[in-house]
Length: 165
Image (cartoon, helix red, strand yellow):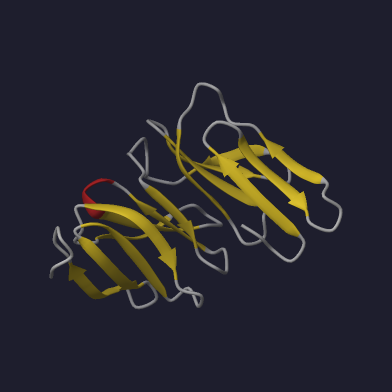
């Protein structure tokens, strides 16, 4: 991930690192807990919030200004998380769980806003449109497009093994 003067990289073993592009200086070095397995992670556009989906522990929100956890997502518990995504304006969090379930949360309060079934057996990719109006997902069983502002599934397209429809 990259902003105007920052670049970030994360992986399951080493944690998150953020560098200033102009100086090459490492500004954030958030180490992964050696006892946890990260399923997915997401960084907000302002580079001050980092979300980690830890196997068996749900989602944790990290305040990168202090490099400390500030809590989890309300009502999410220890459910299995397959994908995390943050909206371009940093106000929404999308979480894909088991059996194609997708939940949307408000970033500031970490409270749930919407929950829906994508129609997919498993969601492997989540992305917001540039405007943040649409959430697109893909995985086992096809793709979906959801208008998150109007709370409606605008398109679901099933695909089958071998590329047919």
